[in-house]
Image (cartoon, rainbow, N blue to C red; front, side, top):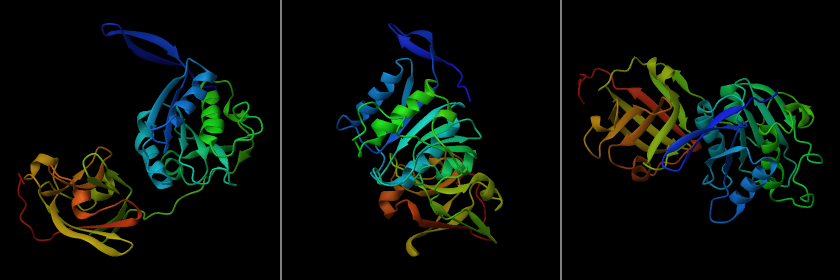
Length: 308
């Protein structure tokens, strides 16, 4: 597929906005941190492929080695980027081992470059898989890096992602085609059994301590919820109960008193828990990942208040 050209805006001088032709966006995600030169190195490799590339950062502060977190951040971000965007995701505890280096094309028209280690679990589910190709590292890697085995983010993934975004190569040129599937991480799928919702905690809203679930608006609607109604919430870690309590379902944080718990739909339209002006995760020692499960049940026979 030939990648189209985007228009990119840039602000110069006293707020003057100009339009410049740019190639497809290249979006970078790693667990490298920004304390040293690793991120600058991969950005430099990409820039060296084409100075016209529009290069952006998803995050470089991912928890080290946490493949699940990388998978979720891609799912969280991808819907807001146009078709043709190339994502390079490098959370790669198996660097230098036999895990495959791949490029994934989705039905939404996005491309994902990185190790096939579970990172692409959620975007494959959400966006659908058109094709997967294994990167031919003998042909597609930074010149002079042949004896480097521990920095594929710089030597292979940033290089290939930039060449794909800049249309130096097409998807078909990446390498041999593989079955249209990727390595998938196991996790608790959302379920409704009777009047009880069960799911898991894929992520925390770190800045504020809110706890996000994988229970979306559609499955929650099957409980016929009304603002002001109270729900019984249980959170467990590997079947050990960590939190058990009640909270109202409300539109936003200010609908409850300061310090009070609440159930709400977050910006991704998934059920979440919070403390108004507080940190729910820290207060109740809640984490995230496949071992963290949630159970939500509407409390029966309650009198609903219009303004909780």
